[in-house]
Length: 26
Image 1 (cartoon, rainbow, N blue to C red):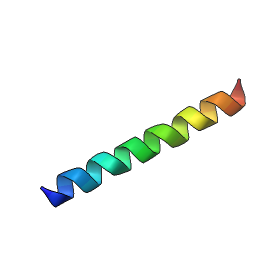
Image 2: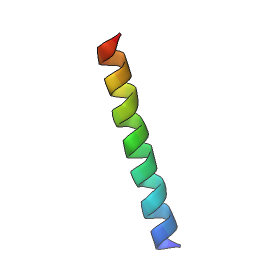
Image 3: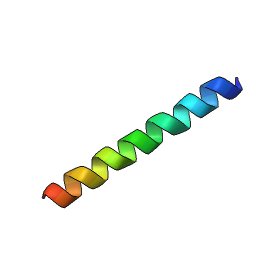
Image 4: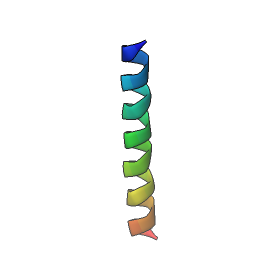
């Protein structure tokens, strides 16, 4: 269960980085 939450937050962090990259490109 803890692993799942950790993985989920990691995915969210990766998504935020990707979104930031996209915004800076535009």
